[in-house]
Image (cartoon, rainbow, N blue to C red):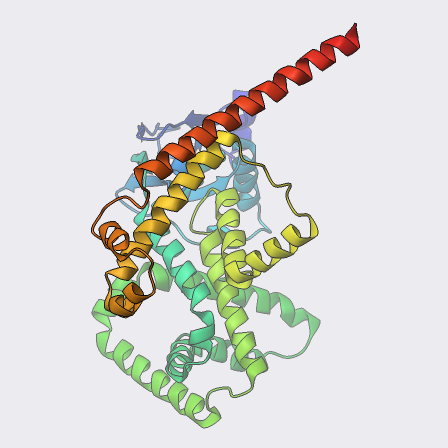
Length: 404
């Protein structure tokens, strides 16, 4: 096996020598490179994270795989398993392959906290890898908040001319590269043999775009004058074009803008969390709240209650007595408050009463019943309870006689 690996010197990493290290959040691993045949040759090391169980508490959690190396002389490969990383590694080493996804080198890689992720690193230099966990990613929270605000204010923004001009200027500044590509494609002959060169050109274009993004700070610091005039010229031209065309006046055009903004808002909400089930639930809830407001829900509930009315529950004797006491006390307090108010016209009311002194005593806080009325009421209640008990006993005796 070692002899076979020596013969196949183009593929220095053999299947038996494939090194896989499983990391946990917070772990740090240092790669100790080995000297082979008197020189340092690139070696492939694979680092994997198995993933953790999904929970609501980890909805805004994120993992970052950090590579600490003194230079950029390394190649990285990503996959869901060590075999997939090894397959990308083998494909990259073939003569006729070009890997667009690995044209850039990132020293900080975001990892899905809930799924297995593997990263392969090939280099001949010493480096250290760290798997850092962020319990609450502020960036994801801000992305979710921005998506919700954009979704609910999409209709207002679609009808605002200021938003139309700002969006047009922003797109005009960052769309100049597409214009250059379009005019460059006009110079390419329309022959099948040229499509391969066109694809290769797009690969190089993607590489340069990624290099520009990675070195954006350096570009802004070194070429400040060029960047300033580029933004001024392209922004002015974009404003002229938007001003000439004018904001959309057709309601259907405004609806298309609103739906496009809401689609972008849903994309922001979806990518605001690696827990995609939770983010999709937030998206569905947001759409339901916006397009099915509370009034629609209440109308549907009213229709359902009319179509299928619930069976009313009768009150027990104790509940009826408690409710009658409560409602009577409440009504008497409301009557006292009204009589003490200026709107009641007390002198006219006193002329219509049979016993003004009793009414005045009630207004001042006295009882609305006299002693003989209370005694009569309690006597009636006792007699009624006795009649009910007697009727119940007669019914029981009748039932027993019928059984005999």
